[in-house]
Length: 517
Ligand code: FES
Image (tube, rainbow, N blue to C red; front, top):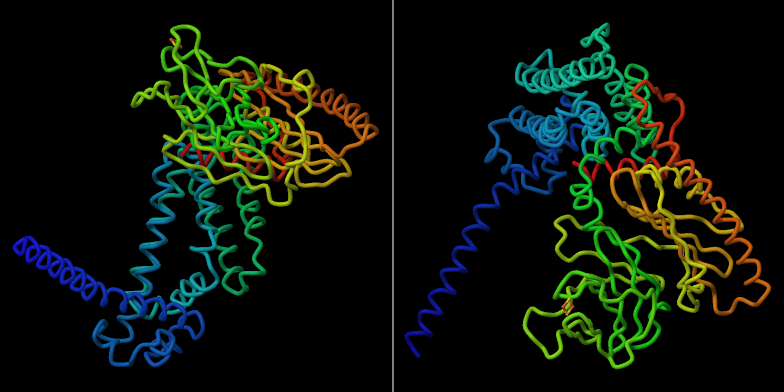
């Protein structure tokens, strides 16, 4: 017992000593980085000539003597600061773009985003680059670092433009001139940033200007990327399994409303992307979600849209397996229960997600939507779904364009929830449209509605009428998406570069690109 105790004490002492040693070793690195950060701030405020050791240590809140410990001279400290910026630029701009080299249009789009990113192109950092350029002719070290960074960047842009020319077949273009043009646009924007406060910088506008330049040179490629779902759609259509994993597996999918399962034993079932979902309110009143599949064979355990498990059992009639409302096998057997899904509830809505997803998307943002707890689902007969001969991404883009999610009307405001959901709260009614991929070039569109319990008969009649109208509108939009899908196959079609998607559709397309890479 004593020997055990001694061993334990020795081990704890050793662990403490190791941790103290690591902390001591990390201290110089932390202090050096503080001096570098302070140098960048001082360079921004006073320029290279006005930056003194006294000013740097004052900003870093360190003693003046400490500089000598880490740097031979003020010049060495400033070179280290510039080197830090160059390394950051290399790691956060050049490397991710190089990784996309095989997809030059995507790579250039990412390059523009990263080059203008507020972390890289903050007024503080940009001002430092330009301050050093002013001194570059005087100091060889500065020239070497600035020059190397610019040479690497120019070579990368040149390479991507070369690839664009080859893939687009526009061999008459002069790649060096086009690359110089893009670098010039980016440089001009950086110069503007250097003399502005962050609050006055319109980064979205800056990005649009760069993309407009690229679109003017490669209209088809960048119109498709920026203005149409075409390039994105085509790129991902070929591999629906991969798309399901990247986009849907880790995304929250709408699976129902609290009022679909108001009491213990109530259930609602719904088919989602590659998953049938069974939402159940268990004996303790907790809302749970399972894959709606028996563990014997993966057929649907429950086929009714809504219902109630009267005896607290979820039974499969094929071989007699049964499960409790908590999903456990009855009688209990380890590892034999229903496969459970993650559940997220917000404003009365129930969302589910695979617990095994490698990438997890954020929770749906329903800020501004009232808690729709006091409402009831419209009868099953009033729910609606339709199969459409169009890829789900074309459907989403069309709906986002047509329904102006960013503007409010008296009928409410549509909001987009990544990746495939539109939610609108109108007077006395909550409407949800969910778009599910059903195969290459094919989607299933579902529409759900929940009506306020307090709605009087007049409001209900109005809602019925509005439902009919909105369904007619939706059907028209879906016919349009099928026609768009068909048009996508025309190899000679050219998009008009002046037509741009709505901001919500642009966000959707950008998130798709983000999901793909
Ligand atoms: S398939 Fe359900 S019990 Fe066999």
